Length: 133
Length: 133
Length: 133
Image (tube, rainbow over all chains, first blue to last red; front, side, top):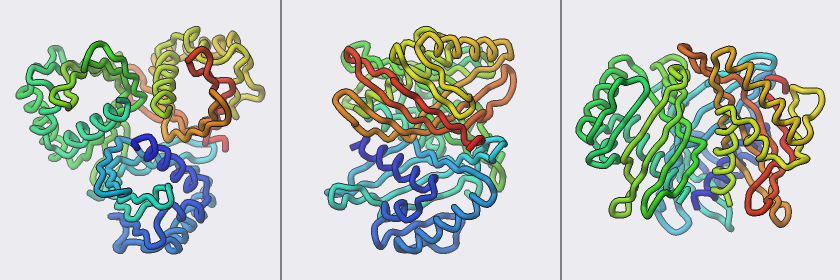
């Protein structure tokens, strides 16, 4: 189970960092909620999540920045059949083309995961940036 | 077993980073030893370990800094029944409120873990900061 | 399997970061290929890989730098019996003696792993630095 979740996160974040925002958004449930302390309101639903991901991807590409999401320090708690609550840390590492790599953000990430047809999906994600804590 | 150890580290470090120093110290054995190349003498016993964790937590809070411990590159070796030796790397990522996130320290961490009533505890931890190597 | 691969990477990188370049090179197949977008040509064969690792180790020691390779966000795909393809991220964290720790490089790493006599070995590794992307 622990390995399944780690593999899920690896694949999910790779999609986002590679700019495959439709495929990335499909790792959320159709009515998935993405909440972050940097935004006043949560983003709700796969289509809106994809749009938000797409805007960020476009801005980063224009700025010549490659972004990598690292999730780690994963703690899993089963909260029901095919239902997990995951607490973890996330780092966003940004690299300027021809330049340096720095930590853009250190965050916590709290996920509600549900298993749908054998695949894990995020029903609710709450990201809290440490600099806004 | 590998997942158990990773989950243990995730929960242990989250307690420390959240400032729950009594609960964090309870993840060491009653006579646990915390040794670090930045300190001339090891800290011995759960109460002393909690005190040291508490002082660091107070200083960081006063400075407006959120600290995150990342353990990774975990290599586990069974050294007896319910006894493990773990070698890993640790990064301390610090974030100033309203400011940037940086790597405060890169270290190695060598742990003797023992299983007590089904839970893992640290009997001995040796942290070596790379900048003092 | 996931734990096996993580433990393999932890041990492999520890050997390199500790400067045990012969032992590190032995984690590649005899005809292993190490390819990186920073080099015009791949390094081929265990002896050449050890030589390249040795040169880097000597330079870092002379400069008083401790280097740590962090692999994470590991996604594993079985491609045959005892044959895996692994995609992951890697960070190189460098620490100056008496100085600061910084991210030298953020990279992706694509590995072909094969199991030989029960041990995993790297048959082909392709490292792509994000700053050269």
